[in-house]
Every structure is written in structure tokens, then in C-alpha cells.
Image (cartoon, rainbow, N blue to C red; front, side, top):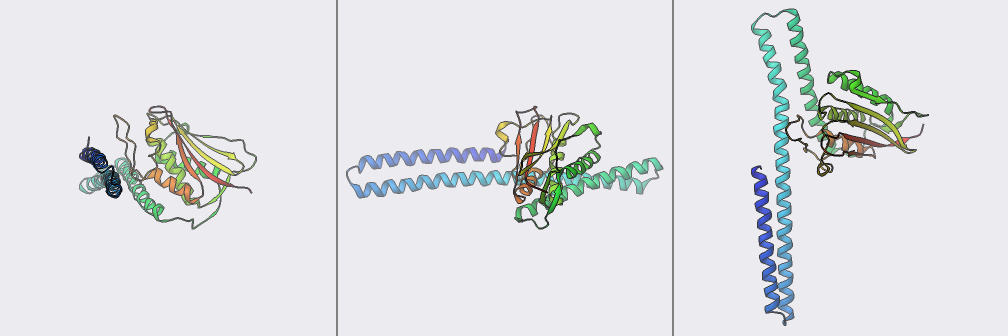
Length: 298
């Protein structure tokens, strides 16, 4: 239990004690002044306001402490995600500078440094996108986007980025008479689908087994569904995983990340007039994320 969690429990207990004391005094006031209307009304009103104020103050305080703890966790995660690739790149550069290495080893060093640079760039982009998602309310660049084409592009990119075999991420073919087209920002939608794929890879239990499907849920709705067989999500966590800075950490493991990916997906979905939701039967039972968008009839 962290120090902030202990402090939250102390404040909640203190609030309960104070409310109990206020209720006891209120009952005593009613008994003593039961026959006098004016003091009775004033006393009951005053004590009610005191109790309400204590409850509101405690709820606000505990909520702010939770937000502060999430922000501290986010800063620690981002610091780690930034320092690790920088330290790796620096180490390989110092090695190249200090001694002679063969061509094969030099190429391997360059490959690793490029991977670290990509990881660093991805972290920075996630932070920047989260800032934009918090401020931007409307779409700036709109146009028709073929979801089938977009999903295939994102799957190819995810396979390359995470060095996965083709069968690790399977694209489920959907028998549609017409393409699934939505009206939106292609870069935003690419980010949303890529984040869902990255999340599925990151939370896989062992070698990733992911399926991606586009479907016309209704004549006016298009879905992108990402299903994995990974660590799953407890039912108590399902309503929180789209919150900013929040990360579900399974027992016995520590998953890297900033806690911004799913928050960005939700923000993009809202800007496009859609939504994102998740289903999971519990821990170690996988999860299914569905990005739902308004469909355009061509």
C-alpha cells in the first residue's frame, strides 16, 4: 500500500468519524429543542450543511490525491521510456567511438539504435497526441477513409515494428458488398487503430495471437474490432482503462507504457462521432476492443 493510499484511507475514516459526530450532535439538538421550531430548523439546516461540506471536501480531496498519484506514475513511466532508449543509443555510440568494430557488428549497432530511436519517437508522439486530444474538439482534416485499407496498413506496420510473424496478427476477412468507408482524419484514425494493435501486442501473454476485423455493425455504423488472447482485464478495471494516465498492471508483471494510448483512442473516437469499448471475461481470458465509427454510404 502506497503512502497516498494510506492517506486516502485516513481522510475517509476521519470524514466518517466527523459525520457520525455531527449526526450525534444533530440528534441531540433535535431532542433538546424538539418543541422550539426556529432553533430546531436552524440547527438541522446547519448540521446538514456541515455534513454535506465534509463529504464533498473528502471526496474532492481523495479524488485529487488519486489524480496526483496517476500523474506521478505517468511521469515515472515517461521518464523511463525516454531514458532507456537514450542510454542505449549513447552506449552504442560510445562503443563505436572508442574502439574499432567489424562491419557486421556495426550494422547490428545501427539497427538497435534505430529501434531505440523509433521507441523514443513513439513515446514523444504519444505525449504530444495526448495534449492535442485534450484541447482539440473538432476535426480539422476530413475526408473519406476506407477502413479495410487502413486496417491492413496498420497491421503491416505493427508486424514490422514489433518484429512479428504474419500469423501473429491475423486480418479476418469480412464478406462485404461495398467497402467500409468513414468520414474522418486519416492520420487520427491510423493512430487509433495502431494504438489498439500496440496495446494488444503489449498485453499478450506469450507470443501474440491477435485478430483484427472490420465489419458493418449496422447500415450506418462501421466497426474495427481487435481481439487478443492475452492477460485480459478484470471487470472492475473495464471502466477505467480509457482514463488518461491509467494503466492496468497485471499481477506478477510490469507492462511498459505511458497510460495514454487508450485515452487517445477514446478522444479520436469521440471527435469522429463514434466510441470505443472493451469486453473481457477476466484475467488471462483476453480482451476485445471495438472502435465504432459512423459509416458513409458511397
